[in-house]
Image (cartoon, rainbow, N blue to C red; front, side):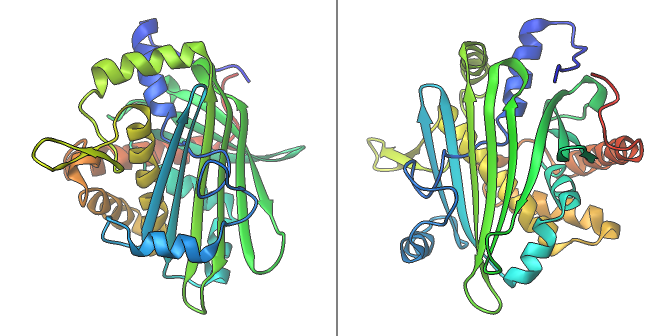
Length: 307
């Protein structure tokens, strides 16, 4: 579907739009680049990696960069029974209530089409932005039900703004015991020459000092140095997105929106080097405004008001 854009400056539009799109990025399938997105890899291997996680909480993060594709996976132990987790995640409203927590998501709406459930993400800069001047990404929302012991949700878009193509997001969960589940959030996004150029510009000017979480080397003082570039961007946004689900699962009540936003912000503040972008008051104020915009769009039926 064509995209509506009203920015006046093509280069600024290109760079900020590209930065916004890379909030939703993951690997082509599995724990590693060669894994299978239709099933969790060896559970013992995952749990061992989670136990050795440097995050200070039970999550394991991986990322991969290829010539025309970027990928990211996060595995997490969630303190919720599988049935409870599935009831939330299989609901498309949950995804929009979750995605809006991310800085770059200006609105998320959903609607039923003849061929299934659709979502539209309005994505833009980190600061407040009206949905009408944000980029649109149109996604198909699929609920898979392979068996009662597993939950699988898939989001798909064949293309997106500014050279983005073959966008995929998979989320699946299995039970660990009666009270806990193992969650796997998996992303992949392909891009062409235009998107690659935009990314290079953004990383050279807008995010050259930003880092990810993976330690790739050590400096002369023996201190760790973290991955940067596209992999660093993917890792930051993968963790932000997981924190959004964590915040929603803690505060699912619609009347607790502000508490949900505050919890997401507090989670990101555990990693200020990677995730800090603004102060709490600024984040809360702008997200409450953007959420109102989202509700107004949804009240119109969820379908985009422009082509």
